Length: 640
Image (cartoon, rainbow, N blue to C red; front, side):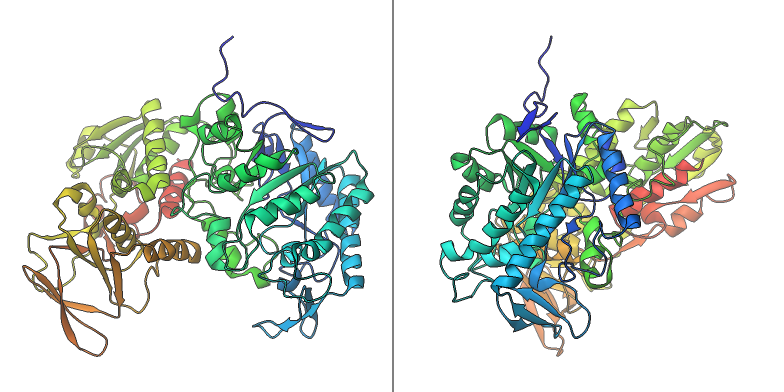
């Protein structure tokens, strides 16, 4: 029998008396249904469970075991997970000083202070500590009673136990602050009470930040010392990083596309050196190959997959089938996080997550099927444009059984995603482009490249449905000299990187201009980004913006200027004025226009009047994101 491609990833793992059928664990994100049918070893409850304490939550809401209605929902979740062969884990969390409390009430933490929102935070005394530790034990017992196979104690991301562990938060001068031995007392109390409550044979897990990414935070060696000190009381440890309430560190906790894959492996390797219990690691583990490498090399005993399982809940099943090319890649765009973080103080759990850029079914399982049914009436569908919207539309129409012709004017599919071929920072975007192309190659979709789809193509193909995914074009600003030979758009710049000089001025400080600026700076170019408004990257969510700015700050040859208006481009300079109308010149061997995009409205409108069912999608309808392109492409074809 041939050895499995991912043999280490699919080895069983014993945690206390519990045996997981593979080394893949789902992070506590989103819908459980699809993930639990995909062959995963263990699913952490979708919405993290807080302990039964009114000051334990980021947002209003009752304890999930508080009444028969709430607890029945939890029991149903356990049933969904377990009936499909996965194990169910319940996460227990207390947010401490970050709790959302009623007006006039107070939060609790290691020290007393008044938060920026005016809420008082009271330093916990010993009785408070004992009460909270008992609440953790009560929550663990409830989880055990409701059928969960394991409990995870959340000691990471700046929550209450971490607030005592970390010198960044813990400024106490009594027996619970100062030295390492003092700072671990209360967290150790929680672990001991929970273990006593659930017994020795029930599996206990813990998530902890290997590194907090703040000055004065807990040192990784101290994290190891703490875990080692309670190793006899827990059965597995999850290694994460960062803090959730600090945006600058949150982009480490949930990495953006601007961070490398396998982000926390360096910390899990540190833990593996001295720990005898299983070590799990989370953080940008995107492919089965990465998971297999981590386990095979002994860097961790299990991998925890989060957003990748939102992008493709059947990641595990496809890995087991040795079909990694069929896995829908996660873009790490954090569309599934941005709205949640912005509205944490008035949202329940993660209900305000908007969507997934590449998975139209996510959180819409009631109206988006796992697999579309075959159409009763087969149609001939003409898709014009081979970008993400057009490719998704073609694939979806093909899934419905229609005859599909995909026409693209360039020599290859991909549209603007082809820029990702030239920039390592865009590795996830490139993976998605390659995925779409590979799926089209596997299908019987007829692809015609280097074809200009003027309306006369309609008389040749005679389609029943036309889908226009023509994309958008760069807006060329009215700047004197903009037509000079050393001026190019950002879209054109990527395929012609070898023609870009050493001194570069980029006009436009949105995400496109800033990403290109980083790439050119890393290539050794001297780059200046000019932005007309007062803000850079205003077209991205707060996570992507923060992650990109952090990356820009590391580029020594990259400078940015806001509130700047360009007035002329000469052979050697860019002439500009600032907000006070002071004129200055910047040396520029190459000028790149990273300005706004404009839909090809006139070109699209020319196709109307020939076929009754004609649709415009993606950037051709309105310039947007990959999320909008993917969903447009799916929904326009799903109804055919």
